[in-house]
Image 1 (tube, one colour):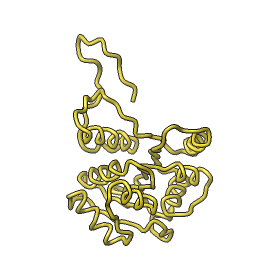
Image 2 (cartoon, helix red, strand yellow; image 1 turned 90 degrees about the vertical axis):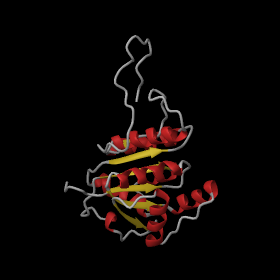
Image 3 (cartoon, helix red, strand yellow; image 1 turned 180 degrees about the horizontal axis):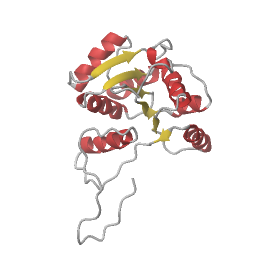
Image 4 (cartoon, one colour; image 1 turned 90 degrees about the horizontal axis):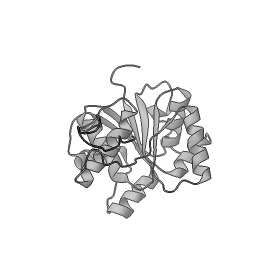
Length: 214
């Protein structure tokens, strides 16, 4: 894979949009090239939960995210949610991998079924068929049997399932620190070390605390 291939960051219409914004900010601050897809559902969630209007037009959306993330680093290209003629819809376009954060169960189900109604689903299908990293961060609770079967099918097809599950061994004191933990752990699956994180390196000497899992 060529150096500096972009990361595809897809944001579907599940709750937890602040995780997506922080992921984009950390990727850009790390000087990563990013191909961003914000689904129609995600735009609606931003409006409903946070009162923010995310533009659908790519140039306006790029300006919007640059302002929200407060950084001019990295490179960013935004895509219309339904633009299946975009470069990332083709297997000949090289990428480092793709992360769907957050991933709605509707998106998960359509990808698992091989159905591509929008650019997120098409790009995910491309990553699976090309054998490139695809990381899916489902944001739903609880999972029913249909969800579990769809996620299993995607794992069997080569995707990495990385739900944003919180932990406390890094001793977060703010919501922002927990958001960073969740985002950074998801991107560990692409071999990217974004931001800074107190990682588990064994129990404190003299402590009886058990080792964390994940």
